[in-house]
Length: 251
Ligand SMILES: C[S@@+](CC[C@H](N)C(=O)[O-])C[C@H]1O[C@@H](n2cnc3c(N)ncnc32)[C@H](O)[C@@H]1O
Image 1 (cartoon, rainbow, N blue to C red):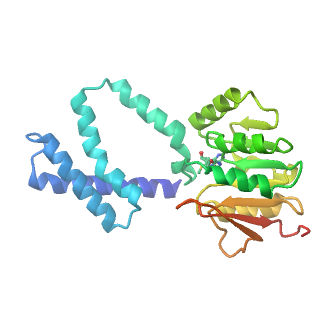
Image 2 (image 1 turned 180 degrees about the vertical axis):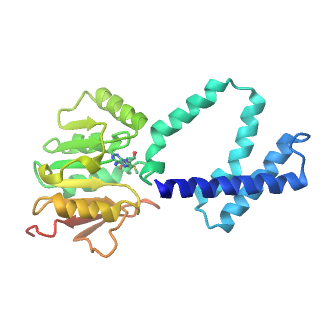
Image 3 (image 1 turned 120 degrees about the horizontal axis):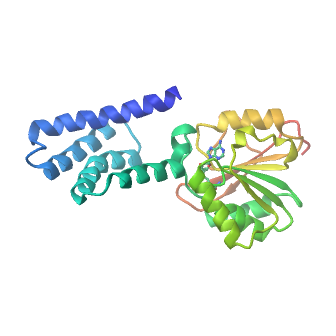
């Protein structure tokens, strides 16, 4: 939680400094749109100075101009509340778990379908909208997939997709945290998260996993632990599927 607060504080300070900096040049009460554009430029420059990622620089640059634009549209107050709730409902884990919502590519489903043993019971740790789980289940009807998600809107989308796919019996979608899920009942765990939770996930896998079970991670490594296998992916961001076997497992 303290990490989240530090991050909110850093972003807030960038925005505030940019607002004050722009105020030196343009009076916001006289020329609100021009002030907002300058504020955005200063915020993006400050974000670069503080070595923020490109997505974060863009968000800093657009935040106040977008607020000003919406203000001019005179949207009702509940519209903002709704937008905030929707953002939290889909992206809460970007704040709480340092894991944003993005999806595995089509090739990942193919690679997983090749790599998973017959009749495997798979835990998908953070399933997003379950696109991957449903693709994989269609390719490998012999495996059982438990797809867990805690962001309510993502889970709602996952459930909707599952219904639209004809409620396949080998996919079980649930709204709960994979950190509370005992791993003893699974043959494999698939994760596409971020660098942040990987050491903790490895600890959980080592402590709770059964001998021989697999941990498969899209792109993100475990510091200091070499994977048993690496399969190439084709994306600029999704480069490799890394596969570890439980350290007490048989090869
Ligand atoms: C990068 S997305 C990957 C989605 C999907 N697995 C895929 O590969 O297409 C990671 C997802 O994990 C979810 N998540 C993060 N921490 C979680 C937790 N502790 N329990 C359940 N889901 C979590 C996020 O909300 C997000 O939807």
